Image (cartoon, rainbow, N blue to C red; front, side, top):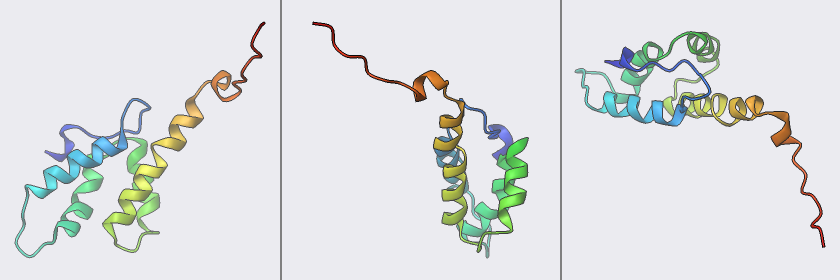
Length: 101
């Protein structure tokens, strides 16, 4: 179920939406003796493909085991920064023209 809609990090994908769907899916699962946080840690890599799998592998070693930390880093890494880098320079260099009389 987690692999049904994997996140690849493409510009048209929303990391917040991916996490919302992922966490909703996990909340419907229960494994005896496993917390929701542990379940999310175990399943999250399976919801990622391509360069996202590489991001996870590089990032996971620097995490303290806190799901919130992974979630925050994921959203920061693949939302604003990625979208800003892909904007045309015309938008970034926008200047307002003076109004003609």
